[in-house]
Image 1 (cartoon, helix red, strand yellow):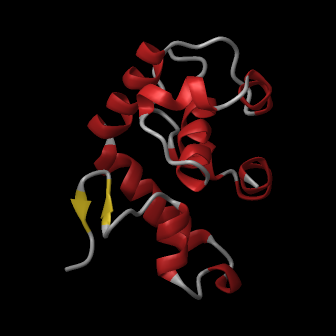
Image 2 (tube, rainbow, N blue to C red; image 1 turned 180 degrees about the horizontal axis):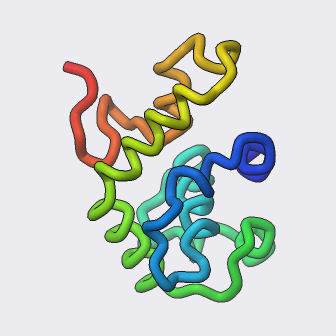
Length: 123
């Protein structure tokens, strides 16, 4: 599903454009975080122990370390206002048929208990 969304809409490429820095595996790592959230939702520390290498390869990742996961997560957090602005622009560009339920779109982008990246969305 993640690859289909990327292929059809370019979601990950658009959201994280410009914040990846020199990290060559940045976009694949963000896909791994989303996959984790949609499936087992384990802690970052457990991600590499939970998912098989085949999945990592399917998402475009080679060998990676726990430290790399944390660095990527930190970069996403530091750039959250930019990512969120890009997300809002992405939603506006979507054809109307995909914008009928904003809560569903927020859920797909990582909303958990009314928060995205530590920012409270709903009271």
